[in-house]
Each structure stands twice: as structure tokens, then as C-alpha cells.
Image (tube, rainbow, N blue to C red; front, side):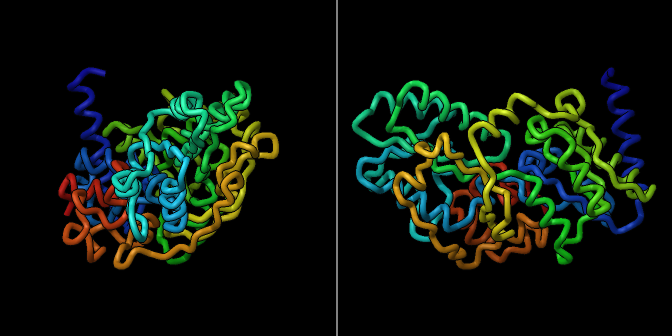
Length: 357
């Protein structure tokens, strides 16, 4: 498509969107969508009756407060090397953060892949190396592969504190909650590469809500919004793929099999949504020696909310970041109070960075 044709097509999409007169709320589930929408300024082009709500699609943000506190305490145990993605370093616990724990002497290291953590374990046989498994179906296969590799190579001092979550059960909670008014979902592109379309088809049929798997370019997002509006106008509710250049209806079958081989689904705690059955991933019996929670007898820490932080309400679309009384006052990227201001996929970080009013 030429540049001029591209501009004309975008104009036609915007015309279609701006013609909508009903009160409609669409939720972008993915944190990457939240940031892309903020960066592109799409919200400023929508009619006031059409709202985009941020959903529970930032893996760092939805990690329960009690789990954050457990991670920090584990990092400060003697003989532990904790390996994590960089996003987790500044996430506040109730008393500290991983960054502060490292300043006190804890051995906390940043890696870009769980396979890096396996190598760290191989190089430090006298230490216990724990990788912090945070993320959805997108990152969990890489953690599964690291567990397979460590087991095959006899790396006994490697384990994973898996806080991985799966997205569809959380979306079911969103649809089932009468206090969360959502008319359709902009479904995550990256997660859908793995899980495909079927989970959204089930949701659309059960709750009569349209779902569209959408890419991350401005044109993708506008197309996704129009596809949702077309279904709403026609009284339809089905799952569709806008992001066809990347996402297949069946998903990534190899990644799905890898997850089934290594993990089993369990109940998990989500910030803002509480405990959700079958929404977490835990090592199955064959790989349970890799389970850091069992290996180090990590207790379940109480979820004690951070005073004044409304991340849970932001993550479920109940409020926008501006409606949190700490936003841009006490809570800023330099001094984040909650994870939604820390993560590069967090709604509060997006609203602050791009000055969304």
C-alpha cells in the first residue's frame, strides 16, 4: 500500500469510528497495546462516547503484591542468586524492591532469557540460582525450555519461581463482573501467536462479546476497533483476527505442546482480580525439582495492598490512571508507588509518558 493510499485508508477508518454515537467501552488487554495507543495518540481521535480501557495485560502489573514480597525475601536469602527480567527490579514490595535488596547485598541479576540463568547456574555450582518466571503464554515456553535444558544437562542448582499466568481465565472474570462495563476486547497479539483464536471464540460465545486479535501498528489498532464496532452494530459476537500476518487460528502448536509437557495449570492470584482458578502455571511432577517454591519452602505471603495505590482498579478498567489520587503526584516514574508506573507496559507509565489527559 502506498503512503497516500495508507493515509486515505486511515482517514476512512477514522471516519467510520467517529460516526459511532452509542456509549461503547472497548478494553485493550495487552500492555503493549496500551503503550502503542498512548504513543500514537489514538485516544485523542476517538469520539467522547467511545472509550478505550486498559486491561490486565501487563504481566509485571498483575503479579500479586504478596508474590512480589515473597520474591524480595527469597532474593535476600544466603546462597541465592536471583535472575530476573529488568522490569521487575523497581517494582515496589511493601517494604522494599529487588533494586533495594541488591543495594543491601542480595545477588540479583538481570537477564534477557531464562537460558542465561541456566548458564549462570552452571558457572556458580556452589550457589542456588533462581529464575523469576513472570509473564503470560508468550514467555512461559522459554522458561519451559530452560527447565528441560537444565534437567537434561544435570544442572541441579537451577530452579524457577514461576509466577506465570494464562490470559483467558482473567478475561472471563472481566466479562463476568457486572461492575466492569466492557463491550468488546482488543485481544493481545503476542499471546495469541501462541494460544490462537479458540479461547476467544469460547469467550465471545459465552458472554456474547466480540473479540478481535489485533496488531500493534496504528493502522492495526484502528482496524481492530472498526472490526469490533462492526460486530457491535450488527449485534454479533465472534472472535476474529486482524493480525493475520502473524497470528494463526490454531496458534503455535509447538509452543502449546511445550507448555503442556512441562507445566500444569493451577489457581493464581492476580492484582485487581483476586484468585482465579486455572490461571497460573506450575511445574508438573516430572519437573517439580525445578519448582523454587517447593525447593525453598516459600510460604504464601499475604496480599497487603500498597497504601493509596489503585493499580488493581486501573488493570481492570474500573478507573483510568488519572482517577488514582497518587498518579503524577506521589507516584511518578522516578518514584513509583505501584507496578503500573514501573513497567514499560503499565497503563500509568503510558499515561504519564505521553501526557494523556
